[in-house]
Image (cartoon, rainbow, N blue to C red):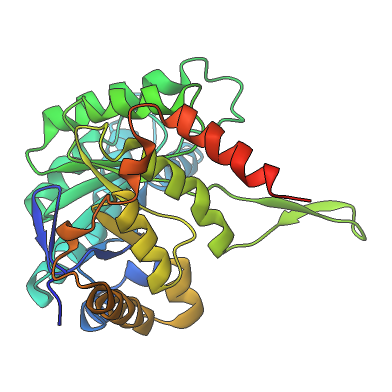
Length: 330
């Protein structure tokens, strides 16, 4: 076997394949299965800011309807708000703690967040529970017309979280920035240790018989990897943090491409749903065989090898490739 080890956010990984946050990493058995099938690390299924706040709000509304337990002068709502939040958080923290005891790979906690307010203290609890690192899936919807400071929110969230924890922090970002390159570079300079490109939004479709909106593909397709590949290649030598590739990575050859583009790690989820956790081992087997065929002994010998073709001016490089490609079409 070749040496597939890598350093991601200062964590020692036996290989670069990370089981991304999903329902498959939301149970102890699921996490253990990921390790048994070769995962280098696991991102625990995200806890959502909204579900905690919404549940507390709903229970508070129910309490307001009962005059026996609620008055405007009582502390009932404060108790319910605290109790609900802590109960949900306890279950999540318990999973992190159990996963740390049952496995030997890094366990990364995850929060899916939309604001920079009431959930920040959760990050400290994750650290105390034993999480080796934290991933913030900052889910700011580009279709939200009420948010006039879309990109500034990223920086405010990062600032608050970095002040709250000492473990490494990564952010998982979307493809929707006004100036992608400049934004990613600026985010990498905030003190974060890693950046995951990219998170995946809900994709709508239309049922023409029912004339109603419906969901398109729930899982990613291999065709979705190319935008990730482009930006990993462009940014791998231009950011001050590690880059993890995500979305559309289904097979070993896909992971190899991301490593050649400069990714430090590769996150997979959809392919695990479609092919089972065993797919991780198949991906690793392909990487190992490819390295043997090419004469590489370590990942560092080829990581970013293709990205260097972008040179000092990626826009000029892409323009040249575009012209070359389409000039050959008859």
